Length: 328
Image (cartoon, rainbow, N blue to C red):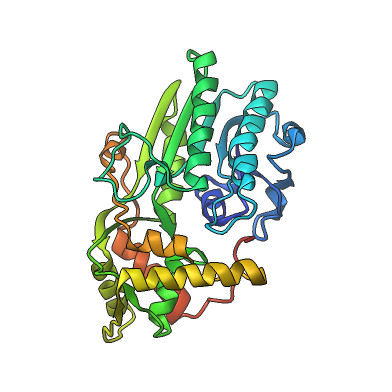
């Protein structure tokens, strides 16, 4: 039996495929993998013909495909991919008689500045990404309730994921520090939960191995959490550079973000800094990970090791131009 990864050509999927084993999985994605093309089939979850792309031998589907960037336009794309796409995958699973799914959601469903929410915490998403992910979770919940004796749903809500060759918000922060362009916005005392991609891939594999009938939701966080001040200091230390912080008030940073939003809208150009990203930067995004311990999972890397490996790869060994997976 195979594990079908839907959306495996991206950052997490490229790390997950070798974790599971190429002989035990196949990949369905709208773009070729670039690294695992030999096990990749082209397919878009927004289209109902996704059913034709999933192998009859599939035992479990891992649904990674998502619209997740902060600057997606139009915003309806979040719902087309994250919600309608989930419905299409579940429909395809029904036709192929596949009853097990692992779905990567997000801690974005909780919103910002919450007090260490666990999986029972009420949802309060602040952006379209978080809203669409929670709507997808509702689709999965309803699907499970239709046949709870036979169906299995595992929802993983990772915090912000970082690692080698990623070009997301964490990379932007690390790159600004490495190139001497970093400015601390706000007091830096806000707490941040993070997750290293190697551990995320390992936990998804672990979730496959323990999967039974039932409905499960897990936050994924690599502890301990950092304050922004602690994170920035650790990065300077790992890069062997003196800490030189320029601090600006949050209100000034937000004004700059709004100004870049206007320029981006007029020019059509996307910038690494925006009002949404500054809002997230200054917010406390700290989450409980106690439930993970109950599964017996032991992360293969500490958060400090993951950070060092990322910095070594990107800025000390200078792989910044290497492409390991497709990006939008």
